[in-house]
Image 1 (cartoon, rainbow, N blue to C red):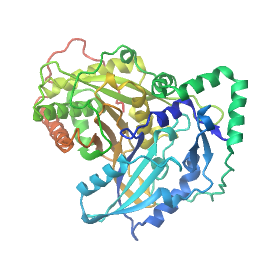
Image 2 (spheres, rainbow, N blue to C red):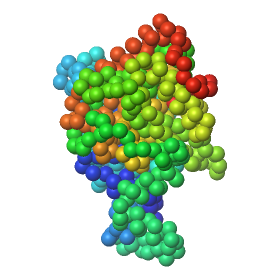
Image 3 (cartoon, rainbow, N blue to C red):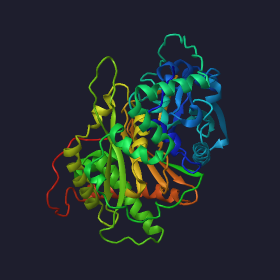
Image 4 (tube, rainbow, N blue to C red):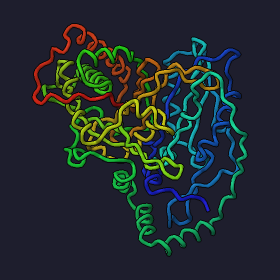
Length: 485
């Protein structure tokens, strides 16, 4: 019989609404190899890698009358060309045109009658490069066998490795009678578990996700459990169905130079950059910003390394952490110190895993970690935070897709109710890339916020060069820490 969805995975289907489609993904820019790159080549690459992500050839099947959670069934009519699509920008294709396309594609819910993912080859960029946009439903990234299609398509070398031939044949889809029989068998053999599953399926599953998420998705810090509601801000409003997307490029070398001069970790510096950008953006909007004001960020940014047994890497966990960004502090150096102080103490209590360890964990990659981070953010009440920031360290070497070198990658983290902005961050091959995903109407000026990020980074770099470690004295200086993602 097909595998039944966990209550946690099912919660992402039930909690989805027209204004909050729960898929994550991103856009990557590639330089074509000699001979070029086309849709047929991408289809061939994805077809070769699908055996590594078996869920991507399965679709969701509901149980009649909703007496049990849905199940995963093989798509007997699976068509890779339906999922791997082709698009083009009107020449000469600009980044602004690409941003509009990303926003439109990400705004649309996935087709639930088919496997819950899509990929787009976007041709026509002005410089001869091309882009790949990918989106996968949060229900696919289950935290136990978590691998995203955007991860397995990439290689460490320009030469595409030879992969074994694919012998996949879809299993017959069960009938309604068989699904009902399996559900009733579960009810009779495991009544307590089945009753809980039925209650969660038939009632308020979004609240069930919070409870289950704390057990399955990871450890939520004690501060999260007792946190006050987030302060009112322009980031927390009713959102619509349409989105905006703006990418931002930063230099990893600049971020490292600030860290060396002013302390903290790379993650601390990136958060300080975002904090400074939010401060400037609020001021540009005419929003009052006073000394002591903060915005609370949800940071699903760390994982617990699982013990490997029986050949499986199970129990992967992403921890949710609340950090207060001191947008009311005018001094960029002090903002960095305050953020570093908060995270230093969280490091001690949550046992965060460093960046090098995250990059080296088998079976994980930046697309997967962003998807897991988005799942954690969706399980925590949006009343507790103002925005989600996922920050994942990527490899500091080039990656390739069928010989095409990846030049940049921008994550897209889904929005949740009353959350008008999410920010995904990845460091890769000497750069730091931010994907700013926003509600189209609530944050019509998200491009302004993106420019504030660049200005905030420049401000910190300048400050670090002119005043090395000349910081205001803060009690209880945080202990030294290794870099974390």
